[in-house]
Image (cartoon, rainbow, N blue to C red; front, side):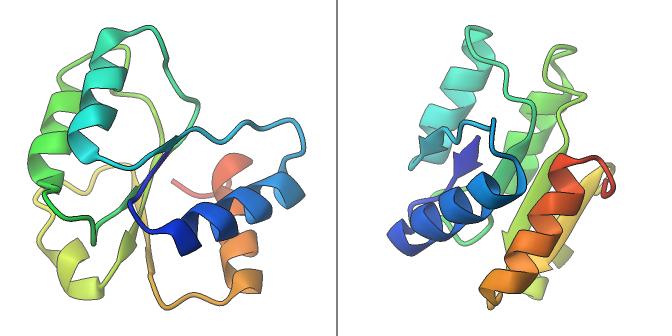
Length: 121
């Protein structure tokens, strides 16, 4: 699941994930509250979660606390991206992977490969 409201990221992540894991399906959610609702419903549990820390209205600490309080969601690997100062604001960084938003496509592809194939996190 990709949680971002940035259309450029929708395209870049979808393409990069398609290259590193051909059988993956990218579910894009453009609103962090809708992402929490979808995750809490337990009708869809993603294998991986990627969150844009630059999203309007995102309280990443509350988002992660809600996830970690649910046993079905607590084990989902989470990759975050944004500005380093946004990552520094995260109170509980257990099992989080971070990279800076000013990525190059080849770096994004490499990070996603390692993340999806459980070499990161």
